[in-house]
Length: 199
Ligand code: ATP
Image (cartoon, rainbow, N blue to C red):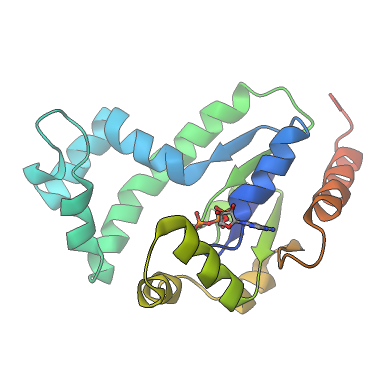
């Protein structure tokens, strides 16, 4: 199965791009959503998180205590690395299992940390969604009701687009000027041409 990774900075529009691929019938694995799911559902991972971050990592109803974890990792890169080292392999396993169940010419994995997590090594191609910084900030302020300074803090924690571009095979520019759908269609046609089975 041909695997395509999609990433992009906060507010770049990677989910929006993935939704267009879904309309074209391409299955999308949303790694960040699945990460939250496995932190709840994967028993081994739960135990590892409790060992690393304490019993307070889970609430009495077994849901993840996001506030507790966020407080620990937000300003501590070592702790964030520890958390990622536990969660990423569980997400990789979930992706492998999910891929086996898909029937499509190719599948997409959307991940904010596609490059940082090393997960792009498991994809045949990678796409970077980009947008000018000012547009990304405005989108996130509007969507998440955050202050500009908070959006910038989150952005500062991600690899910048120049670094990501070096690792990407394709780029989608989502600047609300260049049309998005034709860019996605062109990529779709390329992937179908590579793997015409089931198209
Ligand atoms: P994050 O990593 O922060 O979750 P993302 O890269 O997945 O962000 P989206 O959620 O797709 O980005 O887009 C961010 C916001 O910008 C959303 O509210 C989305 O509807 C809006 N948006 C994205 N692309 C466009 C566009 N081309 N025109 C107008 N609004 C857009």
